[in-house]
Image (cartoon, rainbow, N blue to C red; front, side, top):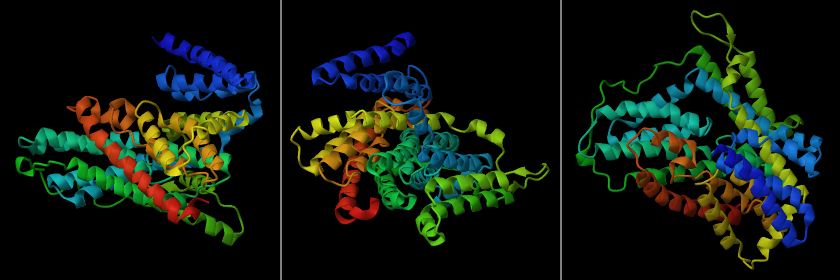
Length: 470
């Protein structure tokens, strides 16, 4: 079966490239269509690991004359790659020194022990951590904490409570990620492609101006949805001891130092443009991220009974998500190839020729399409292919270049219906009492709510504050 998947990529790519180039009378499109379809099929079927597929442009583009090797390789060193690299190192420090657990315990200890408060506490803790740590790592960290509660939940409605708590973990980890530029990979892809295709440099603060309140509203919608038909009279939670979620009473000196570096980095992201202009030096989000990461290797940790070492050591980077970094590079290389070949402009013109001139209707169509497609394919692959097209379409209609791109990016993170749609869904589904029906039912309604909220939020931003993303 794996051999068939491997062969399907180049075979389907060659067939579609031949048919499209012949139908359009543009034989020069053959190489880029072949490359794009080949990569897309391997990403969807996962015939080989996704980061391995991301290396294909280094072979295909120079071989087929799409781009030379130097230009193709430069995409793997895109500024956004280093933004995420710095963010990954900061998240690694949080995990190494157990700060993520301390934060989760702190939130849960203050939301209370009643069933509704437990659901709220787990949702808030998961969403907050997912703003800075990958949604997969967040879910894996929070799941054992949720499972530890299950034996203490009694009553005829206990199975329903357990299911809803598991769904809250998966959904909140996806919702929290949209709040920051480093919270989820599609945001970083948008950051890179908006500069590459539209000349717009999205700032950390600018994104949070939309992402943070939108994430909060979506989290509230999720919480209310999971409380629908809540039968509190048939549920009882008896947690042993008042400090069940207490965690450690004080942060260690090393943890305080990590918090300090993390806070300085966030402050740098938010105030970077103003600070850079005041100091007269360029200060991009990527520069701030690398500065924060560098401090982790320069400032010593203080652990009792251990020899002094820095907060992070290079051996810790073995746990870094190197594959995601390669995935970014491959995505940017593909987008560069699609743009330079003229394929994006062609697709944009074909799209505009459909006769749908109302930009708000088009925004709805693109957002719903992204929301549906993200249930079946990687959100990184999805935005890599869609964003250049919708950016070109917006420019063709003389709209803000990101008019369609931002809602499409947000929608790509809203995969709530199926276990295979995103790793957090798979994690809570595996080995639990959740069924496909449970996840699909709740996920369908949350998808519908998310679509409406995203469209409303983006519509208001572009109508009243069009300069926010300039």
